Amino acid sequence: PQALINILHKRLPKGTVRTGHRVTELEMAENGILVSFGGEEIPGFIAKRVVVAAPMRVAAETIRFPETLDQNVLSIMRATPTWMASQAKAVAVYDRPFWRDKGLSGRVASHAGPLIEIHDNGPHDGSVGALFGFIGWPPQARKAHVSELEAQIRKQLIRCFGEDGGAYASLHIQDWATNDAICSDADLAQAPRHPALAPDIMRTPHCGGRLFFSVSETAADSPGLIEGAFSA
Image (cartoon, rainbow, N blue to C red; front, side, top):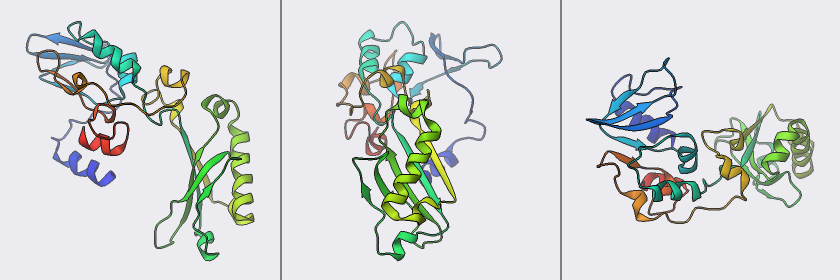
């Protein structure tokens, strides 16, 4: 996936990618859409067309859209869950993939956890070892017990792989539930669920052909997944 991003990035004119610019409002203008960033320190600009590629719930919660946008669109956006938004992953990095020496695949499925599944995520050449797993604890428990979570992950790796499992060089935890650019308040308030196919209205132009939605959840194929992002 990173290779695809790099290729697309190279096609863009220099200076067009701006980080730290969180869109707060889209407003119809005479010759396009005024894009605002919520403060005078970052001036807005007028775009001929706007493509919203953020998770639909996040966009609905954080961006003020033009009054001419169909209210049904906003209702659909608020009702569409972002797949995996409230999930977390841990990656343990080792000097080498010691489990391969023992003829093990690195694959674990667990009802005890805290990692409900573990996979070998290291390179084929074995130059470094990596095991990643999805964390089964809910977001509230992860937030309240960060140090305990790390300790329990280490215990599980030892339980599954022996003492070598606990001798990782580093442990990285990525919790998407703490990222408000990915996980919305609605996603935190509800049990995780996969988005259904969005109505056709989400795949059509809006506001006089100037506003588009193009995110995995708007795809006509595999919504919510990386294949859905490609098709969108």
